[in-house]
Length: 149
Ligand SMILES: [Zn+2]
Image (spheres, rainbow, N blue to C red):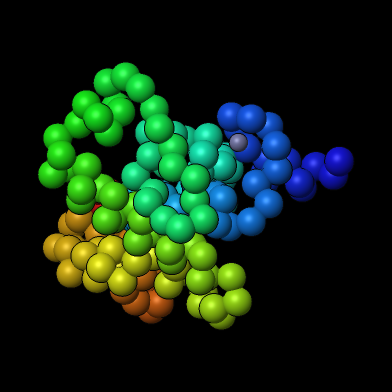
């Protein structure tokens, strides 16, 4: 196997993450949980191999993931579960339409995630300045304090 293929192997089960709609990494990126700067150096993982997040995907064609224990949906606050299901499922549906959409990587995130980052006060969006303005140079960005999230 070519060395360049290694980055697409799931770090849990070791199998290929073949398509974007089974990628936990891209799901979390779409949800605004992965720093764009770190996207290409973060290990791939199947959505199903991250069951604490996967349990919130409620979609046709996606076999429900059920876990037990402290982080199981059954043991979480029902309102939180409802909000997480809505949020994560929206992200999953976005993954399904991304292939062939022609969108650049910078626009993969859910619209409300992007606008949240864009309307955040400057000190909290330093790492996401690339989303706001292409005219900000890397040097300027790296000198801004703080990190999003
Ligand atoms: Zn896996």
